[in-house]
Length: 209
Image 1 (spheres, rainbow, N blue to C red):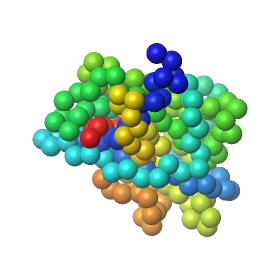
Image 2: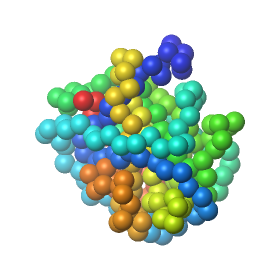
Image 3: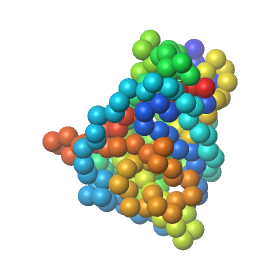
């Protein structure tokens, strides 16, 4: 199945253990990510007993259709902090959901979005039999939306059986710009683990409602 066929699958994501947020906004005056404010280790998460749908939010101005099918978005040699986002997609009964489409897009480490010529930091994958997905990328930079600095964030869409079910967005704990951001919510904010190389990883489990 080609990307165009797959992307008739639009999806409503539901976060089981960590969370996702939607939204994006146009910005100017990009600001480089400060990694020291995001250090720390995550506490082990308890397995969910109830899978509640993840709340949707706005798409924002920077979404582009027809992004490539790929899990590695760190392709252009930018300086930045390595980031792996992984998780599982399940249904409302917490059963793994195979064949769902998960797409992400985000700003580069300097807080800039691409213009559609390169599709940098944009891609989609299909979940495996166990509902798992994973992306390798770089930590997105912050940028100003008007006079307000947005926290680092990653946009997420999901499709299932030809239907777009959710557009949302994930944020990162301990980002000092979470407070006061009108889109960020604690239920859709994930913890970052950091390994000995300084790379980050985050678990972002999704539930299709």
